[in-house]
Amino acid sequence: MDMENLTSRGGTSRIIVVSNRIGPVEEGKSAPGGLAVGVYEILRSMGGIWFGWSGTVADQSSVTPNMTKDGNITYATIDLGRKDYAEFYAGFSNSTLWPLLHFRTGLLDFERQCLEGYLRVNDLFAEHLIKLIRPNDIIWVHDYHLIPLAAALRRKGAKNRIGFFLHTPLPPRAVLQTLPDHGRLLRTLAAYDLIGFQTEDDATHFNDYMRLELGATAAGATLLLDRRQFRAGTYPIGIDPAGFARTADVASGQSATRRLKRSLGDRKLAIGVDRLDYSKGLPLRMKAIDRLFSAHSNWRDRVTFLQIATISRSDVRQYRDLREELDAAAGHINGRYAEADWTPVRYVNRNVNRNTLAGYFRCAHVGLVTPLRDGMNLVAKEYVAAQDPEDPGVLILSPFAGAAHELDAALQVNPFDVDAMVEALTQALVMPLAERRRRWRSMMTALQKQTVRHWATSFIDNLTATRTEVRRVALAHVSDDLTVA
Image 1 (cartoon, rainbow, N blue to C red):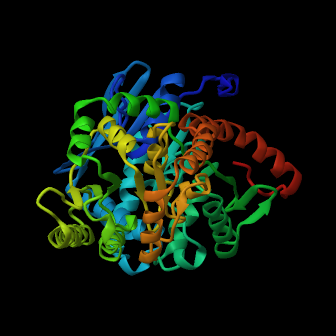
Image 2 (cartoon, rainbow, N blue to C red):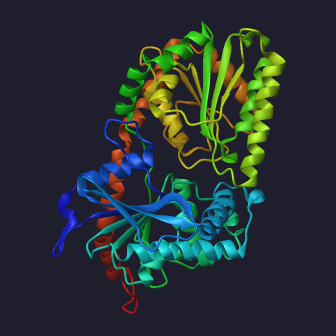
């Protein structure tokens, strides 16, 4: 990152990161995920503030943030009151926006009261933030919980450079139109200077919606709407592949991985690691495992499937129903095919340490990443990075994950086609070593080009340059009566 670009006449800029939940990274411990790692690297190098919800639900939302400092990073957190949590988080964010953004309009549950609660909490975030920011600070907002935050900050007088990154997919205009009052919400994205997406498809959907639905006009790569100029770009989030490979190498000799290997004997391991969510395609994956053993009985007692599904959003009905469905599916498969010394499906409903997961990935002959729709899916990238270069496993990947655009050497399979998933499983289980190595090298090269550090620094670099570029484009293409942000 060019630090000179972040210095202005008024002093050096800080980064202020805003996310719904904060995930501090502790030195020497496993990182909680790509977002946290990328954000932490930026904050550690530049200094700044990470602002978000503490994860605590209280009687009332916080009046002032709780501030803690770690080196040159300040963590600022607020508690959410029960009403704010119910309407903002459980309601509009997870019962309305999440299914909408994952193309699941049949699961969309819209309540006007929850929309108002969502806007109210975003305004609450802005009320706290406006007291913390300095004129030269750069503000980077993350994910669908905080779509209208920049608009709320602008109303309170913020003139800073503000960027937004969407970690989920963005569906096309016809799907977005199913959200009641969709224009009211999505128009607020014009208050950002730069909006980042995981894939080119997402960015195209955004540009089409802004132009065709809201009447935005284009001046080069810049969109013009409501007397604002802003840009959209594609920034596929990555991981630290070298770091994760080292973690997997160490973890492969640790007790948890050794116990797993001993329990498998000479059987092959297929693994899936997902948050328990209907976007991940887990019931269809279980059907594929069931069909593998029913249609190909020669694989019985030769393959074990380990599914780790971390429970989330247990206060949302669809998630409770999904858990019951998967419990039943795992029980059915084990009841039908298990032997006294072999359990076909090992189903784990709890968090597993990321270091331990790296060791599990290293010894898994097959990695199953088959979401119905995903913004990126870093599990796919971590599985690849964890492999032994001399004897790598095979990644089976849904084309509906953002990672499929980069990991095109994976066995890509439509997760809605259970028979195709069974065919991919059998192909993976017998794939020759030379082909496994060739596919792995291709994917590892892709991971090394698009690391999490590259993702974070390229977004911030583009955000800092956006104002200058927008002014140049505006002078060349826009009439004098248009206000330049």
